[in-house]
Length: 259
Image 1: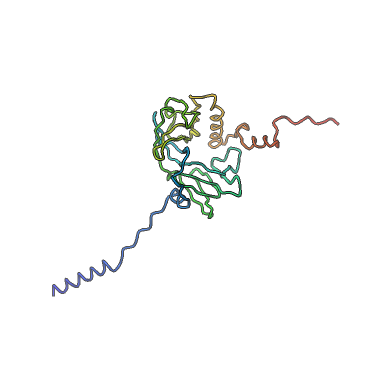
Image 2: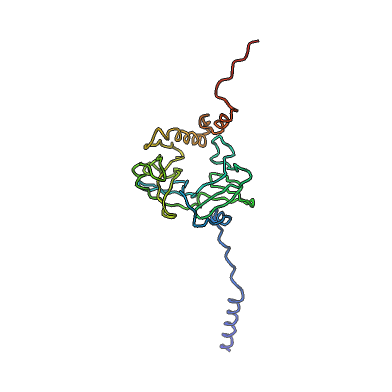
């Protein structure tokens, strides 16, 4: 009797264990970078040409810069919807409406309708109309060692105009890096600080007069973003465009004629 009960229990246990599969886990959700890559197409050979990176500094020392960045080869056919210079957190639309905006990264490229920047990250509208948010927090952080020329402040074959040095960079800065070398082993050959939230972008110590107007413009834009300070007319690209087209003139209007 005991042996019979044991067999029944074993059979019942095996039936319950094998007859009802455990619920499957939800598939892992792709982050924005992976989703965007799924819409793109590979570049044969992984791409070529100089590489640049723009992002937020997570670590820095005298000989390297680490940033959380979107590694762009470029955004072709894109222009700011508002050319006043206030569009850092705005929309980039097609310059030529008959062609897509081409967004390229290492090893792949993507055609899209528009690119919108927000404090949280970059929103890309692909040709199907779907929007993909690439969060800043999802971007990979990579350390780039500085080339010997950059450490000395000398011109580099891939970057003739040196602005800032690695030792001038602080955590939290938003920087533009010029990179050179084999993919995956790039070294930094140029640094330009674009924003220093809550502070001021320092002027260049390598070529102060050459970069003074650019740094003044960066600080003017940052003051506008953080404090609402109006952007001086000399830094507004929309006014410059109107002047080139002859629509806006700087000289005072002629005095009215006397009756």
